[in-house]
Length: 383
Image: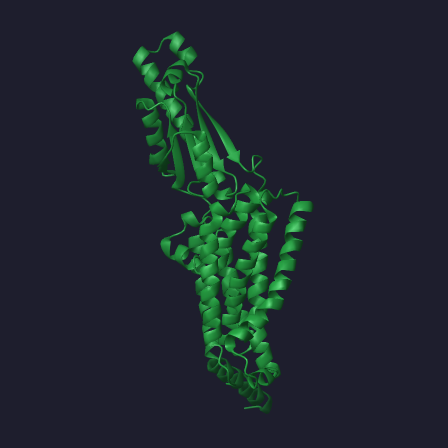
């Protein structure tokens, strides 16, 4: 065998052995394509079915019940609440209990016979997927039911000229009102979520490198000889990064409001503290990754997972309601899922703490648990 080929084969064997010895990187390289395949297959579905819907049936007759049944049978709407007024529907949408509302007026049956019936459809404008699916589905279902009534009327009265003339107009029309984003501008949907994605990526990636970098540079030896506790070390590394992330949040929100003309409807101080809670949880997640990784390369690879899961399973682009239960459960393990609901509620809807306290409490508990795990995982010794 020529010497050049021998050298080349020896180098190839060396690289293969080195790759096989690094089992974490090998598992990540082999597992990531399969993970991406399943995530994209299950998450990339923009059509939303079973939209949580509040019904206000002020008519309470056969035709109104048939119209509600048509909505439910279409599989686009789920009647989760039965309320008494339009104001109650708007409050339910503010709380996030439902994504749509159907208001049927008291004289629905009478106006149907006259050909002047109208149904009000309210949609949550902070959720682009629900708006798109609900807007088209409600219009289609209303037209289908109106055609059914028209056909029944023609059959009942016979094919007379007067009936044919009156049948040229449908007996039911729907008025759709998109709350919070009446023009359905896409940037209003996406920008509050982009702020959360930027904060999570910045926090996780920077925190994931900080402990590994100290270990590789050798500066961690000087800290290990001091009586510093693991919790103190973890928190001391989080505070500077927290300030950096909050500056990034201010710049992102400022550009969104001033440059992209997205109106900020809520309380800026409430939004600030919600961002602080979210960033603390994301930094703790990054530090947990940093305490487990042995090299900066491993830390960077592991930090890609929260970004990938948050982008696909958090609800930023693809609706979570259309995902199977397992992807939804995986998305619940990352703080971006909860912050997206908070950010859109405060940014677009302008709601207060009474509407977002549930997700805020989850973020507080999440941050405390992950900080504790990062402190426990950190070994106060050199490996």
